[in-house]
Image: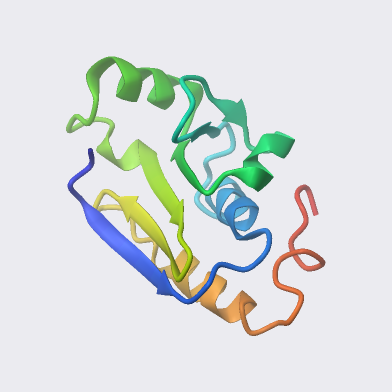
Length: 128
């Protein structure tokens, strides 16, 4: 467990919101090699794996090395900022992360996208 900061985005998650969060971490935070782990799974998948679209609770690791470190050692002083726990709830989305990761910008982007009736589908498709 991180024991860090929660960035809460109030309101029902939009269609495709999980994929959009992964893309923002990959593109805007520079996590080009990130991997994603469903909360129910032991292994991870790449950012563009179709399985990410169906995940409601998952972990995004900065890289395969960060995934291995978290699995071997848990949260440490050297890897705490290399993972984000994403929870797409019924009434809100929560990002649990190290305080050093300033993810409020993702929260604002998600909130803005929810203003559009078609959500993330047409504006933020994977790879687009």
